[in-house]
Length: 339
Image (cartoon, rainbow, N blue to C red):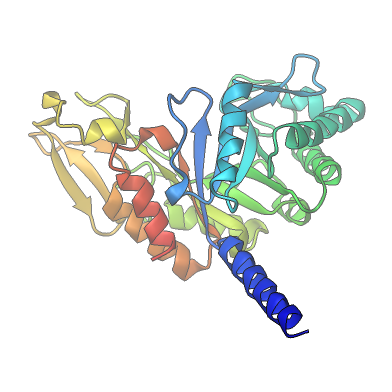
């Protein structure tokens, strides 16, 4: 009997250790990882991965996935890190057929059923919708005024198909438009706000607070707009760009790893400045002209302070492979959320 009690005690201690060591992290650090990446991501500084992308198929009733083998390899990373969550992100800028699919009940239900299929087949933890944007044809895709209501119905149907234990999320425009947030809130786990691409030089694309270099709105204003629209703060992640927008000798779109590269002598003539109101870095040329808007470890640290103080769920970034080899931005996000 004594040996039985000892064995029971050992099993109890092991079970407690296993439970607490595998307990999911509370704050979300979500990286978009594309189908084109050359290597598998290092999951040390990530809690969630959105695999980009899947799309609506040509018959409007299912999902096509870019590079299925890479998706399988990424979900395989969960064997190394059991707490890692991997979702398939469906959509992206210019990805269409959403309007036609969501408008037809038969197609919409078939698409939702296919979401369940891919979740099971690829061992996914959920689905992320990146329809850019319901009721908008700005990306060159078909659109209808009915898209807003149909998007709500689509998320309802996907939730019913994949069940309550899988994640259902979506990417939202920084202006908090195109979605009936109050209606959709009960179906989704969280919302990834694309708080970037808000402007180009001479303005910040993702300034945290409003300053003289804010064109339309700041990240803070974007978050407040989402909360006002009906999503609680603890269901929001703040989007962070791992790239910049330039002009006047700086590429229009430039990755962070190229911004800090020592092999870019053409960048030596530009000077880094810091906007202490917006909490954002930028470059100026020799005449003092604003030529590059981007984020760095300093601005990310400020954004993570805001995330924690505001009670947001966490941070999301686009995209993993745009960081440098030292994981500078990935570490800044992770240690900002988990200081």
